[in-house]
Length: 523
Image 1 (spheres, one colour):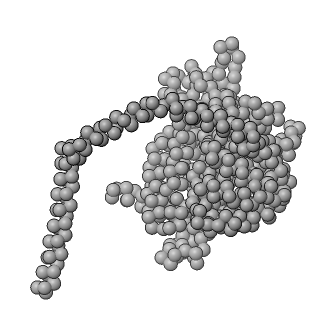
Image 2 (spheres, helix red, strand yellow; image 1 turned 45 degrees about the vertical axis):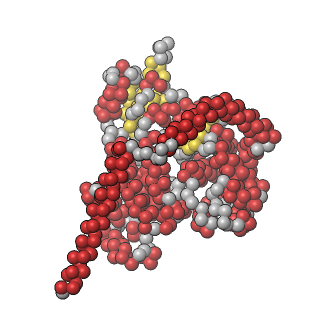
Image 3 (cartoon, helix red, strand yellow; image 1 turned 90 degrees about the vertical axis):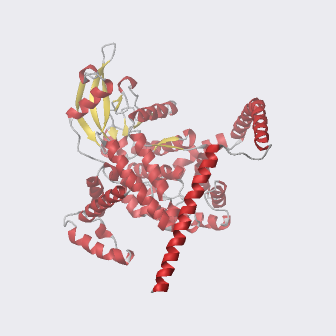
């Protein structure tokens, strides 16, 4: 335990020094800091680099220097404006997840170890890294099909030692979160331990590339009837825990608007596709790409939206999908009362609060943005209002909605970069109405009735076995208590040890008190 405390102290000290050196701590107002922390802020200003650049570059640079765990933490905190504040969360969205490549020799050794064959027996060509991130890097390769045709592929390779580094840092993050929740009420409301656990689960899934391959396959299956979307195919024969091979994509990144126009594509149409694709994934499928920044989105020659890098995916249950659909529909139709009721029905707002008061707060958020184009909407202002409502009505963090909230903001930003006049409510309306009609209308009622009949039939089929097991339990309980409740010898022995231990400490405490009283009396 002492070793862990020393290790945590060392990591925190190093993180503090890097943040101070990059000028991040210089941005903290001394008036907002506790009195004991103000001298430390003064020291931080003295050691800050003079060429630290603007704020978002400072934070990005500091997190990049601290390593992949902190880069991921920064990306994840961008989903939690209620923790770091709306402006910091918005700045973290531009965090560049770029790391130096770990080298061609190591990449080839990883491929050879994974498949227990030389690289030349797996890939006809295996080029240098074309992109390197905190967890993995990507190489361009070629394979030869059985018919002799050559096919270009993307080969993603896990960064060596990343599992050990993340496990160590996640332990530190967990202990810090536990300390904060134990000592601060606001940390308990924000559920910081849950935040760290969600981050840890997300990262652990990213570090097994077989899971990413499965996510590609599921996303492709869900969107196979969507002509405007394409998901790269997975090469399962050349994929494993540390290596993922997929179809190579020749397309234009959505961040290059000029190239999109030059290729003859309509940016406004692409913006619509981006917004509606995300909503269909979230509401229709309950499985959505949760990292839809411009670097992971392309336009191919057919004008389709191509989605890559399925390392971070979000999943919504029926309850959460209904919540999302009704919230969006409430905003679209300006039905603030129904929007408020949905929060209470989902259990997100404690019932001791007033539905009418919450509806009024929702109206204060919704009216200013309704029927406005994207360039007239201040997302920072909207987030600030949402956070105020969250605190005012004791709404706790909802882990299942974290990635959804973050992705909605990112997707809206991507769409706005392509079409500054985009009306996101009008764009969302047909997708939301389709889901409402199919799930909450007459068709949805029939579906739920059919599901209910199926569940009743399953229960009826299992009822005889359930009754048999219940009778057996009752018989065993009657036999055990017929002559009084009897404990096993091991249970009695355990109780005896516990009582002896408690008696020992109790006697010791009495002796200490007696000795103290004797010392006072003699003195």
